[in-house]
Image 1 (tube, rainbow, N blue to C red):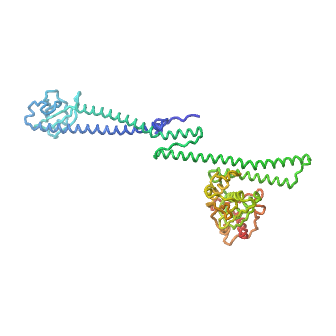
Image 2: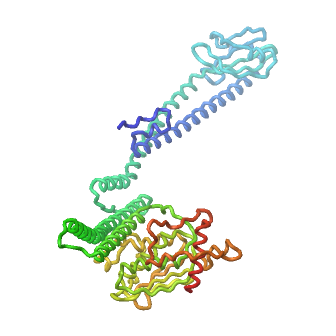
Amino acid sequence: MRAAAAPPWWDPRGWRHGRSLASRVTLLTTFAVGLAVTVVALAVYVTVRVQMQSTLDESLLSRAEQAADSLALSRLSVPSWALGAADVRILFLTSDGSARSADELPALRLGRPELEVAAGLSASSVRTVDSGNERYRVVAVPSVPGEALVIAQSLAPQELVLAKLGVVMLLVGAAGVLAAGLAGWAVARNGLRPVRRLTTAAEEIARTERLVPLRVEGEDEIARLATAFNEMLVALAASRDRQRQLVADAGHELRTPLTSLRTNIDLLMQADRADRDGSALHLPPEARDELLEDVRAQAEELTTLVGDLVELAREEAPRQHIAPVDLAEVVDRAVARVRRRATDKAFDVETASWWVVGDAASLERAVTNLLDNAAKWGSEGGVVDVRLRDGLLVVDDDGPGIAEADRPHVFERFWRSPEARALPGSGLGLAIVGQIVARHAGTVEVSASPSGGARLAVQLPGTAVAPAEADEPGGPAPTAPAADPRADGGREPEGAEAPRGQDVDGAAQPAVRRRLASARRQGADRS
């Protein structure tokens, strides 16, 4: 596998490539401090330079004006010390361009600004002149008519001060940037120490699968992160325990029907060989049919268990066929299925038509799981009461009931009470009930039944009037009664497919509407 190439230098992500968080924090701190020091140093340098030049200009103008007040100044040789500075040069410039140095040094190269002052065209001039070896600040003021007094002061002392200031600021700035970088590195290393502990712990868990919690210190953001990490470890450990329990329960649950199924198939194969060989071992047709029915029932049980596992393993709801469904019909079909499995239980059923918009197969699975749970925990030879009125389905059993402390957990995935762990089962049935009921915008609750067992109550939104009545203002048209699917014990005919509704507004197709109208009339006859 080819390693990812490093980003180019112009990519903003390039500086992060291959660098640790501590090094990035150090670099950012150093860069920020260096930028701040540079800006401050430039501001100080420019301010000092401007201030020194302004002060020098004011001083030169003041001294030049005072010297120009002397009427005899133009004819005297004025030493530079008389103006208060040894680095000052004095020149007399006439309007015709001739210049004379008062200090008897070579004259500076003067220009147009000074000539304009000598000619009386300008009150004064201030500028910098480069003599080749040295730079001067030159000031010109009028002295007598047709002549200007020019004073020039060397900028060497000022430039020396600015150079020293620049060196000092450079050294101080470099020291500040270095100190900021070291401080940023120390803070990053110390502040990220808990993060490194988290990283080490996560790597250790990934390598050894040992869920060891971290020690939480303080109450800052890092402490909150460590607390959240520990909570995640607890949740992960609980999830592992539930998965292990699920595998154990599923294996136990699958082993029993598989063993029985294999035994029945072996008997059928032996009987078939005996019939071909003419052996005395002969299996009567009634016994063969009974074995085949057992094989079918066991296959259905395996299918249901695998379906339960797949149903809960999915993160998203499977695609459903939405249509108006008579919940009473769903309950009757589920009762018929459970009766075949729980032959030692009696079922007292009272239902009234209640139409919901939903998936008939999912609703039947939910009701079947409720009845299976009641039959499993009910007393031997006991009665399971099933009532459906106004969208409230109540299933009561006469078993030991559910402890009040366990009731909040009965609809959780993979959860089983301590009493249930010794019995076959995966703990998925009621979790599937809660999931399906929630998909249909309903609620499910658990409480105690009047007989001391468990009561499971499901409330689904719907109506007592069949949707067909709303579609047909004059009421449902007379049609031939549809065959009651409960007549053969609740099973659909071979090859039959549950009616599929439209996905828009829950409207049924015409064939479904006729069946719903017939079912509504049958529900009215029952009530």
